[in-house]
Length: 113
Length: 112
Image (cartoon, rainbow over all chains, first blue to last red; front, side, top):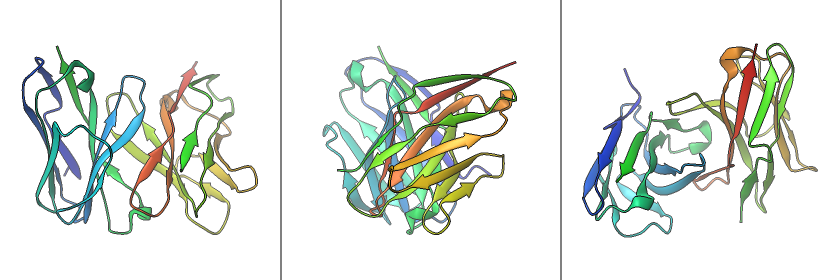
């Protein structure tokens, strides 16, 4: 059983399109996150949700909108895609005590052409 | 502001040789430090962590890291590496606000 699963694994789309990435965790964790990994492998947090409530929103363009229908799901919708949005997006989850460690999904490689 | 610095972007090493991957941090509050490993085309996996107590922490696959408060470091070491250790290694800092701050990563390249 995959603990944190993301779909799709690969996404190629044209500039200006709108796309969504889905994430689900079956660990019973309270907190979920979206991280962006750029071409230089740098990882930066975008959002975190705790039991469906937005906790962290890190200066991300408002073209990015996270949605958490329940605490096991955190989806990422991106409007008007730009070339600079090309990256690998990782979903992660953690218990309420995040010091116990995060569990990451395998990533979604988004390529905007 | 909290930050993590990994000075080496790439570390090449021969199989069975020892290796050290450097990590320095900056924080004005209590720190909790982690090492994550990312194998090609995969997500990140927790390797080990320091929360409190003994400053030397170990993983199940032979890696260890030592927390040094005076030098603000958390270097990762392994006495003898294997080809299968080839991966990207990330040092990360959690300040207790449910936010992990990552370093830029170090690519460990193990050759025969």
